[in-house]
Length: 137
Image (cartoon, rainbow, N blue to C red; front, top):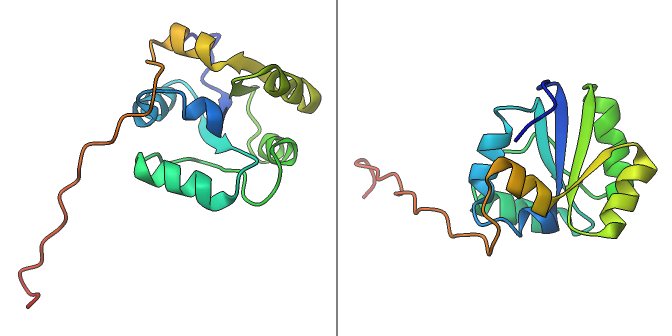
Protein backbone atom coordinates (compact mmCIF):
# COMPACT_ATOMS: atom_id res chain seq x y z
CA UNK A 1 0.00 0.00 0.00
CA UNK A 2 1.26 3.48 -0.78
CA UNK A 3 1.61 5.35 2.47
CA UNK A 4 2.34 8.68 0.83
CA UNK A 5 6.09 8.19 1.15
CA UNK A 6 6.21 8.29 4.95
CA UNK A 7 6.05 5.47 7.44
CA UNK A 8 5.35 8.02 10.18
CA UNK A 9 1.72 6.90 10.36
CA UNK A 10 -0.70 5.50 12.89
CA UNK A 11 -3.20 3.09 11.35
CA UNK A 12 -6.40 2.11 13.17
CA UNK A 13 -8.75 -0.59 11.93
CA UNK A 14 -12.38 -0.68 12.92
CA UNK A 15 -13.02 -4.24 14.12
CA UNK A 16 -15.67 -4.73 11.42
CA UNK A 17 -13.13 -3.74 8.76
CA UNK A 18 -10.57 -6.17 10.14
CA UNK A 19 -13.18 -8.92 10.23
CA UNK A 20 -13.87 -8.40 6.53
CA UNK A 21 -10.32 -9.39 5.59
CA UNK A 22 -9.48 -12.99 4.76
CA UNK A 23 -6.07 -12.89 6.48
CA UNK A 24 -6.13 -10.22 9.22
CA UNK A 25 -2.85 -11.44 10.72
CA UNK A 26 -1.07 -10.97 7.37
CA UNK A 27 -2.67 -7.55 7.00
CA UNK A 28 -1.23 -6.44 10.36
CA UNK A 29 2.19 -7.88 9.50
CA UNK A 30 2.10 -6.08 6.16
CA UNK A 31 0.94 -2.80 7.71
CA UNK A 32 3.83 -2.90 10.19
CA UNK A 33 6.20 -2.55 7.23
CA UNK A 34 4.92 0.94 6.38
CA UNK A 35 3.36 2.29 9.56
CA UNK A 36 4.70 3.21 12.94
CA UNK A 37 1.70 2.00 14.96
CA UNK A 38 -1.29 -0.19 14.14
CA UNK A 39 -4.28 -1.20 16.24
CA UNK A 40 -8.00 -1.88 16.47
CA UNK A 41 -10.90 0.26 17.66
CA UNK A 42 -14.45 -0.90 18.28
CA UNK A 43 -17.64 -0.13 20.14
CA UNK A 44 -17.78 -3.78 21.16
CA UNK A 45 -16.57 -4.92 24.60
CA UNK A 46 -12.82 -5.27 25.03
CA UNK A 47 -13.02 -9.05 25.29
CA UNK A 48 -14.53 -9.28 21.78
CA UNK A 49 -11.57 -7.42 20.27
CA UNK A 50 -9.09 -9.35 22.41
CA UNK A 51 -10.60 -12.71 21.46
CA UNK A 52 -10.46 -11.89 17.75
CA UNK A 53 -6.89 -10.58 17.84
CA UNK A 54 -5.63 -13.50 19.92
CA UNK A 55 -7.35 -16.03 17.72
CA UNK A 56 -5.67 -14.51 14.66
CA UNK A 57 -2.35 -13.86 16.41
CA UNK A 58 -2.53 -10.11 15.89
CA UNK A 59 -0.24 -7.99 18.03
CA UNK A 60 -1.71 -4.53 18.24
CA UNK A 61 -0.03 -1.39 19.51
CA UNK A 62 -3.31 -0.02 20.88
CA UNK A 63 -6.98 -0.93 21.24
CA UNK A 64 -10.21 0.74 22.29
CA UNK A 65 -10.51 -0.58 25.77
CA UNK A 66 -13.78 0.26 27.48
CA UNK A 67 -14.28 3.59 25.70
CA UNK A 68 -16.06 4.43 22.47
CA UNK A 69 -14.38 4.76 19.09
CA UNK A 70 -14.28 8.57 19.01
CA UNK A 71 -12.63 8.81 22.40
CA UNK A 72 -10.28 5.96 21.49
CA UNK A 73 -9.16 7.62 18.25
CA UNK A 74 -8.65 10.95 20.03
CA UNK A 75 -6.56 9.26 22.74
CA UNK A 76 -4.52 7.32 20.18
CA UNK A 77 -3.76 10.51 18.25
CA UNK A 78 -2.55 12.17 21.46
CA UNK A 79 -0.50 9.16 22.54
CA UNK A 80 1.04 8.36 19.14
CA UNK A 81 2.20 11.60 17.58
CA UNK A 82 2.80 10.66 13.96
CA UNK A 83 2.50 12.73 10.79
CA UNK A 84 -0.65 10.87 9.73
CA UNK A 85 -3.50 9.11 11.48
CA UNK A 86 -5.54 6.85 9.19
CA UNK A 87 -8.75 5.05 10.16
CA UNK A 88 -9.79 2.03 8.08
CA UNK A 89 -13.53 1.40 8.22
CA UNK A 90 -16.50 0.02 6.37
CA UNK A 91 -19.23 2.65 6.31
CA UNK A 92 -20.24 6.26 5.85
CA UNK A 93 -20.57 6.46 9.64
CA UNK A 94 -16.91 5.43 9.92
CA UNK A 95 -15.93 8.16 7.44
CA UNK A 96 -17.92 10.70 9.44
CA UNK A 97 -16.25 9.56 12.65
CA UNK A 98 -12.79 9.93 11.13
CA UNK A 99 -13.60 13.45 9.97
CA UNK A 100 -15.06 14.34 13.37
CA UNK A 101 -11.86 13.36 15.22
CA UNK A 102 -9.40 14.65 12.60
CA UNK A 103 -8.26 11.34 11.13
CA UNK A 104 -7.94 10.44 7.45
CA UNK A 105 -10.48 7.84 6.38
CA UNK A 106 -9.83 4.86 4.14
CA UNK A 107 -12.52 2.36 3.20
CA UNK A 108 -11.39 -1.22 3.79
CA UNK A 109 -12.22 -2.10 0.15
CA UNK A 110 -9.90 0.66 -1.09
CA UNK A 111 -7.18 -0.28 1.40
CA UNK A 112 -7.40 -3.94 0.38
CA UNK A 113 -7.17 -3.10 -3.31
CA UNK A 114 -4.20 -0.78 -2.83
CA UNK A 115 -2.31 -3.17 -0.55
CA UNK A 116 -3.23 -6.45 -2.23
CA UNK A 117 -5.15 -7.73 0.79
CA UNK A 118 -7.83 -10.35 0.24
CA UNK A 119 -11.36 -9.56 1.34
CA UNK A 120 -13.52 -12.34 2.75
CA UNK A 121 -14.36 -14.32 5.84
CA UNK A 122 -11.24 -14.45 8.08
CA UNK A 123 -9.40 -17.71 7.57
CA UNK A 124 -8.62 -19.87 10.56
CA UNK A 125 -4.98 -19.38 11.52
CA UNK A 126 -2.66 -22.34 11.16
CA UNK A 127 -2.65 -24.52 14.24
CA UNK A 128 0.27 -23.96 16.57
CA UNK A 129 1.70 -27.06 18.14
CA UNK A 130 1.39 -27.06 21.89
CA UNK A 131 4.67 -27.16 23.78
CA UNK A 132 5.13 -30.55 25.30
CA UNK A 133 6.82 -30.90 28.62
CA UNK A 134 9.11 -33.83 29.27
CA UNK A 135 9.05 -33.18 33.01
CA UNK A 136 5.26 -33.45 33.31
CA UNK A 137 3.78 -36.74 34.52
